[in-house]
Image 1 (cartoon, rainbow, N blue to C red):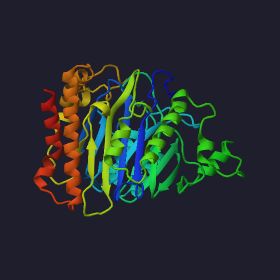
Image 2: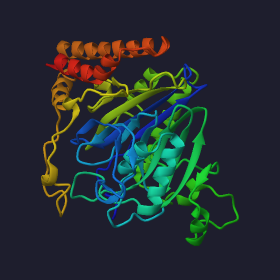
Image 3: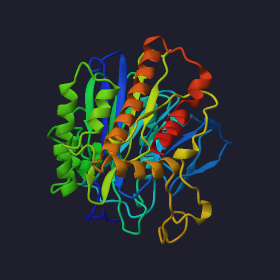
Image 4: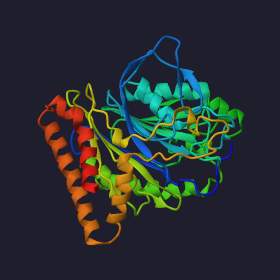
Amino acid sequence: MEAATGNVPSSCDCFVALPPATEGKEVIFGKNSDRPREEVQEVVYFPAAEHAKDSKVECTYIEIDQVEKTHAVILSRPAWLWGAEMGANKHGVCIGNEAVWTIEPLEEKEALLGMDLVRLGLERGSTAKQALDVITSLVELHGQGGNCKESQEAFSYYNTFLIVDRGEAWVLETSGRYWAAQQITEGAKNISNQLTITTEINAEHPDLRNYAQGQGWWDGEREFNFSQVFSLANPPARMEAAKARYSGGCALLHKQEGSINAETIMDILRNKETGICMDSGAFCTTGSMVSILPQDDDLPCVHFFTATPDPSRSVFKPFIFIDDVTPVPMVISPYYGDEDPVRKHPRFQSSRDRRHELYKAHQHAKATMESGQEQGEKLHQTMQSLERQGLQAIKSMLTSGGSFDPEEMADLFFDCVDTEIKFYK
C-alpha cells in the first residue's frame, strides 16, 4: 500500500519530562493527535477484564490471540477504529504514537495499526518496559498495515511510540517488523514523525542488524545508526516539516527544564507558532492528552483529556482510575455495529456521523470564541478559568498526600465534561 501524497497530516507530537527536568518528583506525559479535520476523537474507558483461554480479540482490521487478563484503560481515539492515538492504564503507563515513513516499503495487506498497538500495549503492560515488549512482539508477529484514516484514499504508515510510566520512558521506533528502542530515565524528550534513535540503542529486534546488512543498507563495519540506516534518502515533505517542529518542541521543553509541570506541557501543546498545535488545510489537532505520573506509588496518576479539537480552544479535563468509574456518554461517539462502513467490504464506501455531545457543543462554542466578539472572548476566559480550577484542585490533592473522596473521583471526569457542556449552552 502506498502512502497518500496529498493532504496528509504533517504532525503528531509526544512529550515526556522526568526528574530533574520536572518541577516535582513526577513524570509528565503529553501528546497532540493530529488527524483529518472532520475526524471525531472520543474518550473511552474500558475496565479490567478476564478472558477465556484461547479467545481472540478483533482489532481494527485483524483478529489476534487475546490474553487472559487486560488492564483498565482510558483511551483517546478516532471514533471509527478499535485502537487509540493515546491513552493510559491503571498502572500508570501512558503511550502515544507517531506516523513515520522509512526505507522499508509499506506492507500491502491489512495488519495491526499503530493505534491498535497503543491500546494493546496499555491493556497488556503494567510497566513501560512490559508495554514495550508487548508492542514489539506483536509487530514482529503480525506486522503493521491497513488504511489509517476513514477514507477510500489509501493512507498508511509505520509508527514510533513514546511509552512512559512513573519511573522511565522508552522511545520505540519501527520500520516494518523491525525496531529499535531507547530508554529515557531523566530529562525531557519529544518525538515528531521522524526517526530519532541513532547509536544509543537499549533494545532491538534480534535480527535488526543482519537484516539491514542483507538489504545493503548497512555495511556491517561502520557504527550502526538506526536513524541513518532506516530513514529515506529523500523523505517526503511532511517528514522534512517535522524536523522544524521537533526542534521547536525541544526548544520549548529545554526552556522550562527543571520546572516542567502539567501546565508547561499543556502550553506547549497549544503552541501554534511551532506547528505543534496544528491547523493546516485538511488536518488539525483533533485531541490532546497530558498526564501527571507521581513517582510516589501512593499518589494517584492523573490524566487530562480534551476530547475536542484544537487545545488552544479546549479544556483539559482530569480523569483518575478508580473502581466504578462513572460512564461519560457525552464523549462517546454513536456505535454502528456491523453497519459501520469500516466493517463492511469494500471498506469506507460511505460515512457516518460520529460526533458526540461534547464535540457538537464545542464546535458551536469554538466558532463563538473565534468570532472576535466580546461574547467569544468571555467564553474563552471562562473555559480557561474552569481548567485552572481543575488543575489547582488536582495539585492540592497530590500535595496533600493524595487523599480524596472515592465517590468524587469516580464522578470527576463526568462532572468536568458535564460542566463544560453547560457553559457552552
